[in-house]
Length: 180
Image (tube, rainbow, N blue to C red; front, side, top):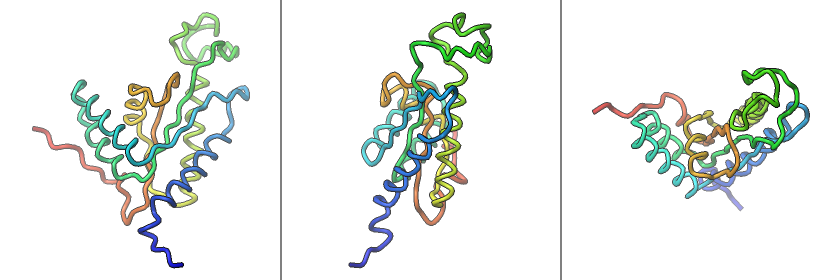
């Protein structure tokens, strides 16, 4: 059997994205608590996320969302990495959140350690992406839209990593929409 790389590209990216998800999962976590959530979007789900980004742009007037909405449509897979807030704080009483103790921290203020965990998971994911030479970019904008859409219920601090195999990375030298 002969396989043309162009024909199997989406399957290859999806398979590699699964390995990237495993790399993110095995990243170290604060106090050994695993509150990181990871999902992969492909095909129509990427289109729906792009549409949500356009809607947020229309509501907010933030034009970079339009650029990023176009950009993720060039991905064969997109990973979302976020964290869920536990019912109890991590009990470090580190004060990094701005409150003297975990008990003093309001429930709607995220524990900084959760954000650190997401950052480390993103770093592990990007390291694996570099190992397998996929094109990628970490996007706050697509994570924000995913959160607003409820793609990952009860998950906060979501970031997106679109991935692609192409002749030139679609995530480099991106053009912003023209101002009208």
